[in-house]
Image (tube, rainbow, N blue to C red; front, top):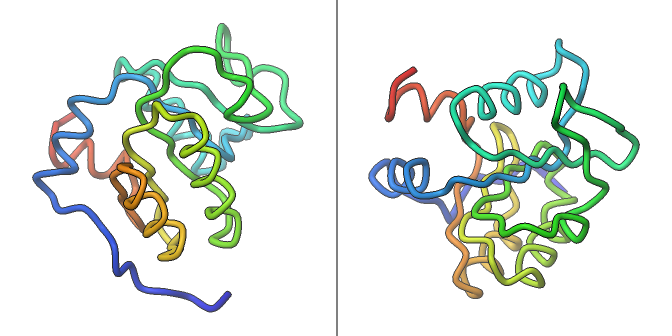
Length: 145
């Protein structure tokens, strides 16, 4: 898949609303390596009051009290948002998993991750989409902290 530009994306006002409304977030591709962006962002979300579910099939514990989950299917509690730290090719399957769950309101892909086909499918199934943006950066700019 060659690099895409996001044809489907939310605007700043919508993003601020998602950050305020969504309280539970699954992070697909979370890492327990503190040098990785996915680790820093996941930890930041936890520190800022979100209920976070790190997803990494090979992991055991992210940080104290926060186990890893193998997949979205393994999380029994409702999830408001899914944040993706995976290659663009993986996003379509993640969008399908979000649709199958039926409770996810926002699919968010981090900087450099764009999959317009997945975004279109999510939108068609009433899931809002943010692509190619860092949730931590947006939180700092729009909410503060």
